[in-house]
Amino acid sequence: AGAARYALAHHIPRLAEDHRRAAALAPALAELPHVHVVPPQSNLVRFSLDPQHPLGRNGTSAALVDQLAAAGVRITGDGESFRAVTHLDVDDAGLQVAMTTLVAALAP
Image (cartoon, rainbow, N blue to C red; front, side, top):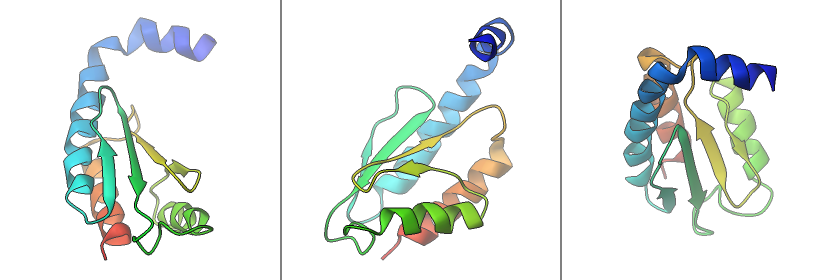
């Protein structure tokens, strides 16, 4: 709770930056075949993969999460849906790295 209180006291004005970055990430992912993106309403970008996507089959979500982590891009996923979060530690340069890495990993 302390971290949340600190964020509310010190970071509310910059949340718009996180939301802008999420809004930029979402369409880059949505353009990919077999990738479905929930339009972000905050700094969370949620997406899922069709079963036709090579990584959309059972047992490969951990491989995707691990592959991205090795490249410095951390997301979470349970096999059906994934979540990418833009936050204080993700600047515009980091967003570009994340977008490039995600698109390369998810492109057919």
